[in-house]
Image (cartoon, rainbow, N blue to C red; front, side):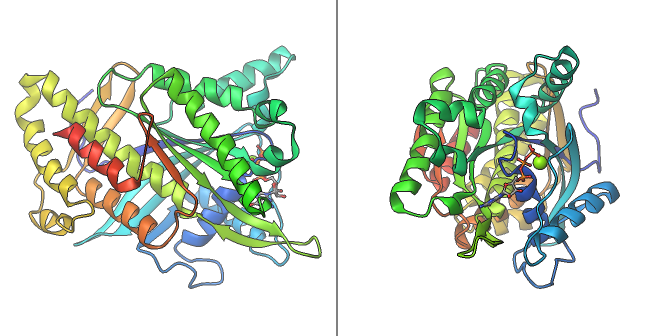
Amino acid sequence: MPAHYDDVPPRWQIAMLGNTSAGKTCYIGSFFAFYRRESVGGGHNNSAFTVMGDALTKGRLANISDDLYRTPPETPDPTDKIVDYKLFLSCDGEDEVIERELNLHDHAGEALGGSSDPVKAAMFDSIIQKLKKADAFMAFLDVSKILSTAPELIDRETEWATMHNVLSTVSAKLGRGGDTLPVVLALSKFDMAETGDQREKVLAYARGCAESLNKTRDNFTILICPVSVLKRGLTGQLQRNLLNIPTPFLFVSAAIILRNAAWHAEQATHHRRQGEAIEEQIRRNKESMRGLFGGLLRRVANLRLRFRQVTAIDPAIGREVKLQENDLEFADSAIDYLVSEENTRYIELTHRGNVMDISDYIRSQAEAIS
Ligand SMILES: Nc1nc2c(ncn2[C@@H]2O[C@H](COP(=O)(O)OP(=O)(O)OP(=O)(O)O)[C@@H](O)[C@H]2O)c(=O)[nH]1
Ligand SMILES: [Mg+2]
């Protein structure tokens, strides 16, 4: 594998996980509706971010999001097997538009439950093997199930055991060093937790899920993130209700960049021979990292980084670890936007088992790099 591919944009793999009807497809449809370049109804999106898909993705997601934006909203059919969306997420950088390609995997929730039919079981297994190749995960925990089920049965209703198994198998393969697996625990249909007690109940359930992951390994970065795209009005009719829509998506994108930067930094330490070039890059990255939240980043960006891209394969897991010019600026914009636009309501972050806010997480990743 050549060490450098010029002008091939980084491609990140993001997998959604979640039981049947957990809200995965509605979430991605709503994200697309809000951030697509020609947004539905126009003028929803005043952020620096926009999203576009290849022809197939655009066709599928435009249909789903148009339906969700009808009055009353129409919801998508259950997803068949596995659907790969190829998305291009762009943000306005200092000097140019920065665009990154994301492969987002949506799947039929029933795949998590397994099957006694051997043909179906084999198909579900192949779906799960594909999901396991992701760089980051969004695991959906259905609030309607958490609220309506006896505590001892909730794990069954959310298929948490299978999701736990997927996440811990992936994390078990990571290198011993600074690498962590980014996971968003999306508390979907959060609109259904109407009282303070209900909100506390579902957040407590998600904290329990995070703890159960942290008990198996200490290499997770877990963001508990309530989301909502719809709610039932007083007359029982569905209506649109958007909470934290950009957060899971932009958080995992930024977290993958930080993860890749930390991975390359570690490689630089372990492989002195390749060190020269990478260390120069790391030195620049460190400056960029310091800039996160410090306003320094703009000045660093002005240095016009000379490297364009570094690519390697993590031999432990066969994962492509790419870092490209402007990646850190992109991550900075994503985090900055999330925090400044109040797109992070009720969120809770644990990094390596420690509860922290997003800026402490960035700082701790920057330390891992130094
Ligand atoms: N109240 C409420 N209902 C929602 C929300 N999101 C989704 N739903 C409901 O949940 C149903 C299932 O949503 P989907 O997005 O299709 O679920 P999924 O996880 O993609 O399901 P599969 O494709 O079968 O795996 C929708 O038809 C809506 O009725 C939400 O934010 N709030
Ligand atoms: Mg679906």
